[in-house]
Length: 229
Image (cartoon, rainbow, N blue to C red; front, side, top):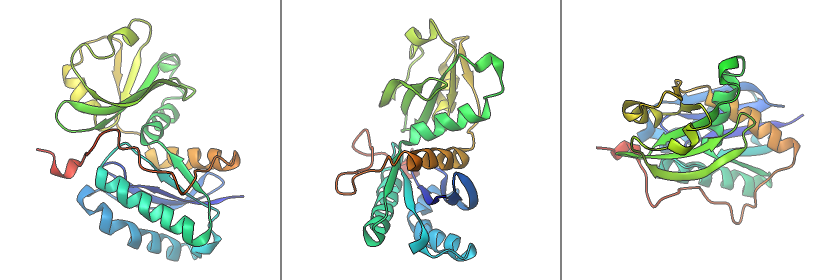
């Protein structure tokens, strides 16, 4: 059995959840990105109190490491590391793009026409830029997480041999300019569920991060959608 506190403040929707062996017990969600900083600590306190759970009884903390909002990542990582240092608990680090990709995989697992497609999560990074990566249906990385300026020719080599399913808040602006028939689009999937399943898998493997060296994955110097023009 494992009791994990999951923290994701990387993108426009923040969620804090408590799970046991990968099953979500309860969660708190914030949809105002500008309030992620003030939301986090009260949300953790509320979540634990509502579920009559002492923070000392948690077995591990999972954190979405980015890419995403600079402020959200900084706040989330500082809180997660602080709890782990204070309670001597392990930290589970999960890339934000991996969470989004896995959510899409879970949601579309029963669709035969997507069984061989690649998954491309996209997080809006202002103007024509996105944070993105490419994954197989087994969550194997084809393209490393990176900041990318998209244009009509993006992914043209990958389209030659694969359909690609695009997901995430950055996929919306890519859909406007993408004309390739092998491009598929889906709405944002259940990132909350995906993160809980991934954190449990990492816990079982004892895939923990070194608290002294783990940092958010910014991918570029600064990104804050709350100030996006």
